Image (cartoon, rainbow, N blue to C red; front, side):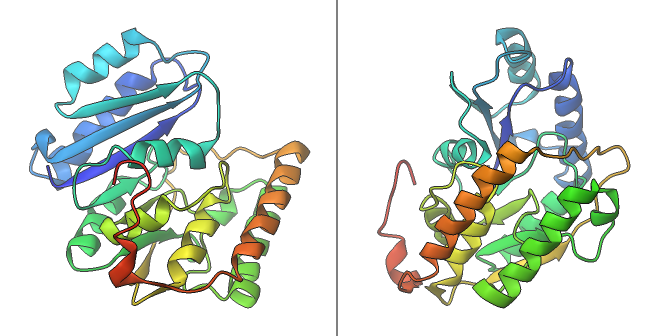
Length: 255
């Protein structure tokens, strides 16, 4: 196996397992010489109450050679789900994405190549693509506001932190497992923590969403929770720097 692919799920639509297996097959056939055994797939069930049963899992296990299922009963949020999945990673490189691969399949291959070439963390960047044109108005304003905030206040090396696909090596993995935010702003927290590590090489790749991807809006309850998480991120801005040569000694969970 050459890398781990971590995919979180929460109440997926009916028939998701066949669509996902089909996309996984296309990813392997197109970019990894049809060798499905090269990818260790970690599927995380984030407390789904429907469409995530032994029936769907049996189908995936029959189609995908290396697959591990992480499941728990109560919904915790994407950040929590991904940390639980990343703890199960077994190779030197890890990539996470949403199950519908909203940015397409090639970006997975491109990220893997960047990691092999020596990049510690690689993240999608939506600023030059078609992403924002497809967003509902309220979500577009919030997303662009976060980019400005990342650039001018947090002064991050990657200002678009919220694209839902990232990859990292063993150093990035340790930092990712240091995050504590359970929902959407865990991405920002991750990049902020990584920016405080001396010599951490972080790179962004431009991404576009696929034509079939539908982007939903979010309500006031979500915005209120994320505002609290934003304050948590701001507090972490004051944390002291870490050193890349030392962080590998920090091993939360299974690293």
